[in-house]
Image (tube, rainbow, N blue to C red; front, side, top):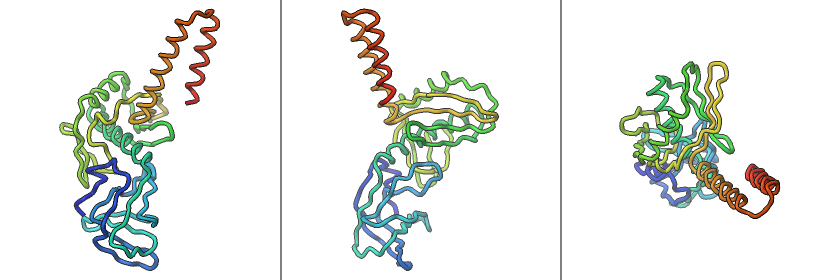
Length: 248
């Protein structure tokens, strides 16, 4: 299979594909398609709920250079429809791309590759194992956002992912095509527990929504400040705006 769309066009969340080859095994079928939006399973990325037409996708693996899909049932048609959860794909794209940049920067400036990612409901968490350095978060964040602002191309193939001038790492999922697509990054918290450094952060749509929300809060507070009401009433209304924002 030459058309691995999860690499070249990772934002696609549904598409039609032709069955090039199939092999029945009991109640399941192994099929090779002319193109695919599915990525091989990852130990840390979100489950994108992949489906082939109405058939459950049981397994996905590279065999002799071909991406082989194992599905439940025995499709008889020559073409099928591929679906994934759009929201999960977008989250995987942004956080896995940020993960690549985290790994590259920690490799270059701290000479460590003991970096892992966990994607949570509202944010991502980077863990750096056996980290004994003094982590300067402000400098790190400035450099990270500079990489985003520069709009650097993210090179990908079946085996590796890299930005020119940075280290190559094994391709372990889906990545955006350009660093500017991350929108930005914001570090929520940094914590050192024993030998490990934990960095909670947001990027992609989470960052964009967070920024938009904060801008709205600031505008609301400005309006309240110019209202012809008592100081105590202004304080009450400002507190109310901040409390409501925490529930968004």
